[in-house]
Image (cartoon, rainbow, N blue to C red; front, side, top):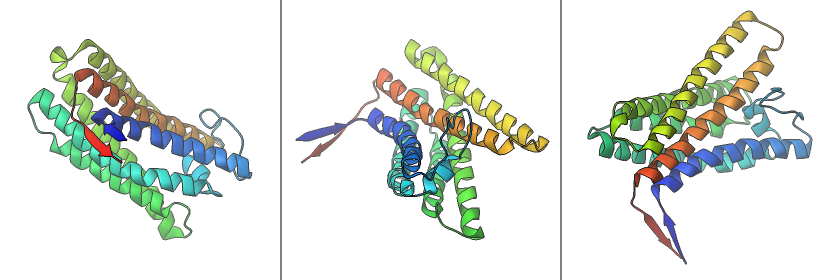
Length: 227
């Protein structure tokens, strides 16, 4: 039997696996009775971290997110190769930022579920820097493509526009979170959870759009795995 892995398969992996990990962990928590029942995207009864670290959910979450970090590094390498083909310029900073984000994702997943102030510190900064570095890499990728929109396929342009809209939503969510926390309202924690779930989903969907852009543009070599 032979499996063929193309670049856009990697992009789909880093899109879908985090979504499966977060939702799978939450549903395991519901099944075991350690998670609050709600629509976290709208009610914010739990954060992704809290949903993933209770009960057996942590095993699913860690088991999926650890390899995702490795695939993220591969994704950013391939993204830089693709961008270089299109722009005729290197994009090393994108690879560096994306790789740093992937390393901090490992740190976050590794310390998730541990107790103590130091471990809480490592979890907090792990997830913060994972989000920050990944989003910076995404922003630079979008900016690089916006400079050559005249040479892009119409569908690739459409996907790029959606990515740009998603990037704008990142900023709206981020600013909203800062403002709500600054006001000190009683529902600030629930609001932060809602923003976290939606933010993480948008960030994952970026990679799905990248997969479609790669496939549409014919970006292509393939790995063959025989068994």
